[in-house]
Amino acid sequence: MTYFQAEDVLVSNIRPYFKRMWFATTSGGCNADVLCFRALDKKYAYLLKSIMFQDGFFDYVMSGAKGTKMPRGDKTHIMLYPIPLFSETQLLKFIEYNKISFGEGG
Image 1 (spheres, rainbow, N blue to C red):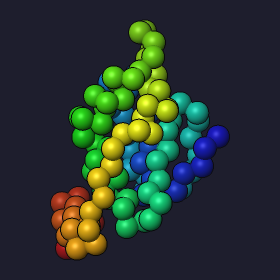
Image 2 (image 1 turned 90 degrees about the horizontal axis):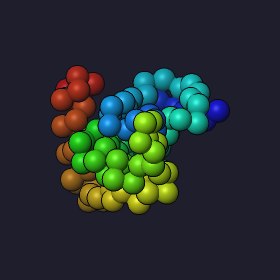
Image 3 (image 1 turned 180 degrees about the vertical axis):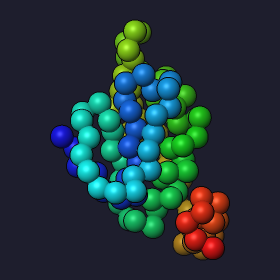
Image 4 (image 1 turned 45 degrees about the vertical axis):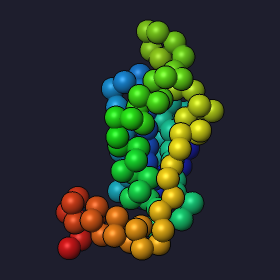
């Protein structure tokens, strides 16, 4: 079992083309078919969420998936997905915009 906490990004690794993902609002546990991504610094959690919620992320996962009937993402391949780094100023603007956009602040 993999333990997750609030603001982790959980991605189903079975049939990634279904694009099942959750930005955790609580802590808990998930099985091995769910990948748990955690920003090393909490201030990057919204950036990580926004990047991984894009179709481009799932296209990338599918480009390395194995299997035909129930494809699974290749964890090594997924970990190579590029995540851009922002300056502190850009990051703060990004966080504020996303909190307002998702009804979490304002």
